[in-house]
Each structure stands twice: as structure tokens, then as C-alpha cells.
Amino acid sequence: MPIHDSKVQQLERIATAIRKDVIEMLVAAGSGHTAGPLGMADIFTALYFHILHHDAKKPDWEDRDRVILSNGHICPVWYATLAHAGYFTKKELKTLRKLHTRLQGHPHRGALPGIENTGGPLGQGTSVAVGVALAGQMRKRTYETFLLTSDGEIQEGQYWEAMMLAGNKPLHRLTVIVDRNNIQIDGNTEIVAPIEPLAAKFAAFNFHVIEIDGHNIRQIVDACDEARAIYERPVAIIAHTIPGKGVDFMEFDYNWHGKTPAKDEAKRALHQLRTLGGKVRSEHE
Image (cartoon, rainbow, N blue to C red):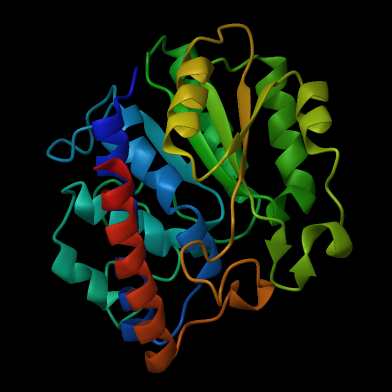
């Protein structure tokens, strides 16, 4: 659906607020992943506040679009997004990784409204998403399945088994969004275990491939609109993102993949994000 400048501005403000929540959640927890959640805030925001057909008051609505998060370690951004969308209260975000919390370090289906899959082992979510999309196709449902996945887990063999099935059926209501931030816990993906040429690999598995700037709201929306219009094959959106987006000392640094900011670092990060929020407003005024 078309998106107006005022809506883009609104989504950018929400994404910044979600990034702030992620920092505060991680500091309160004392553990968790930082770079990926910050890098994916724009995509989660665009999905839940513009693209998806969903209803926070009816999280089990049968025809809702499904979001499957394969790289479950970035779940703080999912939790924060769901809270902002009204699935549960924002005050619960500070319970991340606490004893008996509903906000575990990896998502657990059934623990929270809006969580569609249990995540943990990398690559596993791909098979879940293909199964969800295949079930919808067999039952002639109209919902779309969005698989959110990291680039590091593309090194898993299970990943490509699932993609082969998706392209073979073909699952035209499946959209894979790859967080192409080029990092994993041990370093740069192209040094640890290269995955390029990535677009060509997806195309070889019968996917329609789109490459975008994963921080450009309009490009995210346009890519998902294009994906809905493709009826003969599944779609892979390769979203080029910056790990740690919005915090200069975190950006592009793979050491922040699984590192949590200390209190002084969090203070600096939140200051930068507040400044970023003001900049977003002024650019659109």
C-alpha cells in the first residue's frame, strides 16, 4: 500500500523509540544481544505498523499474517515492537531474561501474544516458516508468511533444505527478509564462511529477489508490496542493514553481536538515540 511522507516520519519515530527500549531492556537484563535488534528496528516497525494484516486484540485471528523469527537471539526488538503495537504493556519489557518472565532470551511460542514460533537453533525457523506457508497454501488461506532471518544462519544446511522446498512448491505467499548486516559472533560473515553471491543463490532456488536498504522505510514498504504481487514463486528481500544502527560506537562492530551495554555505555547510546529522534522530526518538518 502507498505510504505518505507523514507516515514515514511516524514510523521513523517509532523505530527510534523501539531502539531506546531495546537498550533499556538489555541494561535491565544484564545480558542479551545488541547489534541485531538495533539493526532490525526499522524493518520490524514497518511490518507491524504498516505492512502486516494483524490485530493485537485478536492475536490468534486465523487470517493474520504470520511473522517467524528464525534468528531468535534478536527477540528484544520483537518484544519491544509487539509492546508498542499493543500486544502487551511496555512496562513488561524490563523483565527481559528475568526469572519466570514471559520475555525469555529466545522467543517461546505461547508465552506471549504475537509470538508465532519458538526460536533458538539457527536455521530452524526457516523450516517452521515453510511449514506455516505450506499449511496456508494447502488450506487455501490468504495470509502471508514473513520469515525474518540473519545472514549468519544462512551458513546452516537446514536453511537451504527449507528454501529448496519453498521454491519447489512454490510458496508464493512466503517472503524471506534477510538481515544482511555482514556480521556474526566471530566476525564478518565473508571471512568466517562466505555466503555471497547471495542474490544468485536465492534466484537459483526459484525465488524472486529484491535488494533494499534495510533502514529506508519507503524501500521496505515498496519491497513488501512487490512481494505480495508475486504469485508464481516465493520472495527473498535482502535487506542491507547496519548492526548497532543509531549508536555510533556500536555500528559495524561485530563485538556488539552478543554484548550488552554497561550503564555508562547505555547512557551514551540513549543520548544518541534521543538526538536521532530530534533529527528525524526536524528533517520532516
